[in-house]
Length: 156
Image 1 (cartoon, rainbow, N blue to C red):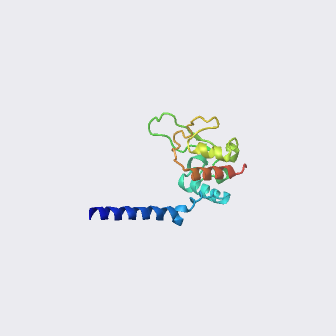
Image 2: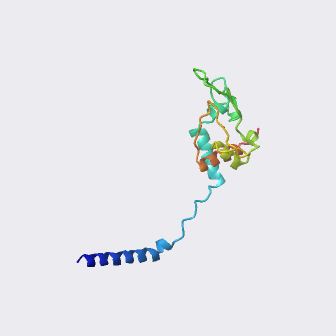
Image 3: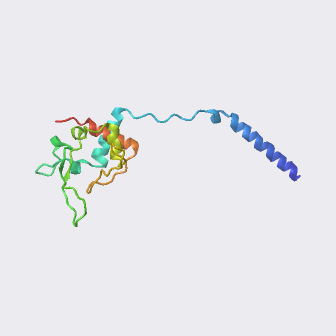
């Protein structure tokens, strides 16, 4: 009886192997990679990330006398509005201009790579973020969206 059960299991296994080898699902080509988002989608996502998630204007946009953002100088650099309570090593007191004219030396792809804290033009690792700039961990699409948006900001 044991050999009959073993033989039946071998037959069932062989049927399963053949079934999966010729099934349409197994023969189907892999799904294509997702399409790169359109420029319009990248701009919208980049604006959302810059304004609502990362809140870049908090440091990179100067303020009016009443404390509101001076939108005529949106992201064009400003004095950092706070200082550490105790010495914090490297601490910048002025956030730089991050609009297209200031970022003009970088292509959008180079800027996206730089925003991820990867490498500079020379292929060497870079330290982009100096305190108080937080080390954001952007994925490829988010970094490209932020870079696309920043590069879209026209000079004044």
